[in-house]
Length: 170
Image (cartoon, rainbow, N blue to C red; front, side, top):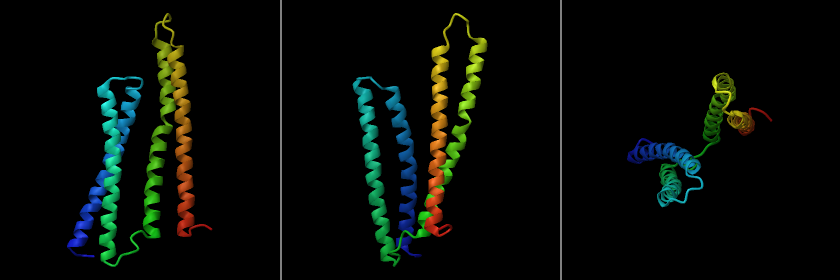
């Protein structure tokens, strides 16, 4: 498809990709805002949370609209089978790779927290009760371990599904 329609579809696909990246950034910012402003009834914080949620809803709808237009252009060009098994497998592979990268990054965090705990115990004034801090950090390390296991399991499930989808295993 080497036409003005193809060029337009390519631009729309690029916009959709940037929109997905922006969506993830806004979702992360909204989650951070939710944690930071938890329990606050301040009207501006509530407004910021609502605006973030609205932005995510709008981005989701815009991506659906973009996808619909892209599909129509592909259909017009005779590519009614816009999503092939190879494309799905490729997308799943990208997702699996991203999950594995995050799991690898998260996997080292519990040890770093334990190191921070030891350092804290070594230098803190004996009159300061650090048990609360170290207990929270210990629980956080456990949660990060569970998160790593969950991400690893998700990656394994995607690998298995992709292999079955592509016929790599039966």
